[in-house]
Image 1 (cartoon, helix red, strand yellow):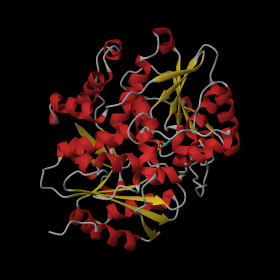
Image 2: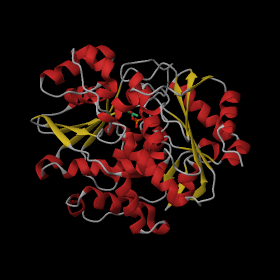
Image 3: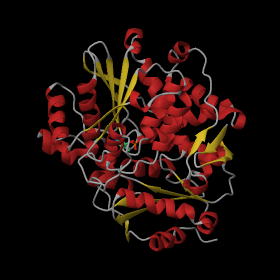
Image 4: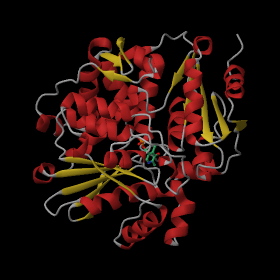
Length: 430
Ligand SMILES: *Cc1c(COP(=O)(O)O)cnc(C)c1O
């Protein structure tokens, strides 16, 4: 598999290099030089989740890893289902929260851990540095927990993720270090980028990112779009609209990549909260990020979405107009109203999924089938959901267990020197 750097097309790397480096020169994102041919889509859709996903990922990766290796990686990474739930006669929820940390980021995080292990020499030193708006951190921490030779450092905006989210990944210890940064998610993301720009640091500690900027995560996410469509009838597949609750836009990138591989999707919708850089851009053609605002859908509190250049590149390659994308932004008040409506109609959701549902409902035509992504388990946002719905949601076992443990996070100012010294301090002494 060859990938090129979107900021410097001369830089071409293999799958292994892209997975190890995360970002290219000038902080450029890697993009596949070739989109694979998958053959007959109906045949592919008839396969089971692991076999089909192995086939898709193998087609991408090519001869760098044997298909047996890829199948093993997928088998270890995807040990939980991605079921559809019917919410209305023509609307389905794709539940992506049945993994160990109860959010869709388990798919990408676990496949990335497998990928990194597969493309790294056993004596290579690796430090994963990642910024999280809540769920990536948990998925990455759990995917790498206890792995030899890998240190994981996770930055998150202090006080801006839900207490349960925090408990899920800031209580692990061992090779997992969590840092509560005095700032926003965008600040955390900027600190990660700064670290990658520091060549000496990068080499000293074998720096790697596990953000959705890592191509292996996006590739894994392509697979559940196929899994979703496989559960629909032939008629429903003809007029399918998929609404994606978006923050950093990795999920939507993966969906569009799935479409580019032949998955029948009529239209995608980019649904955001009031951090609406992309909806405003699609509306006016002007890219004008504002200061990030805290919302009840905090995993989408992102105003400078990292993956957007990949979406532009893909649309350009495929000749798709950006005007073919649906979009919409939903504020907290409307999110709460939507959550209540959904609950009254018999579906318990959480704010991120509710935003995708809200925009889908507004834009779905009668003859179309709608699908919206449920990116997290409602219990992960228990405080908010219980308050809005007057419920007392039961905590699933993984949350219950971590909720009882003490927080181990370090505090840090939004200051690169501090983060750098933490990165050095977690290295095992030689
Ligand atoms: C990360 C996350 C999102 C946003 O996904 P992106 O790929 O960053 O657009 C949405 N919902 C939840 C629950 C998340 O954790």
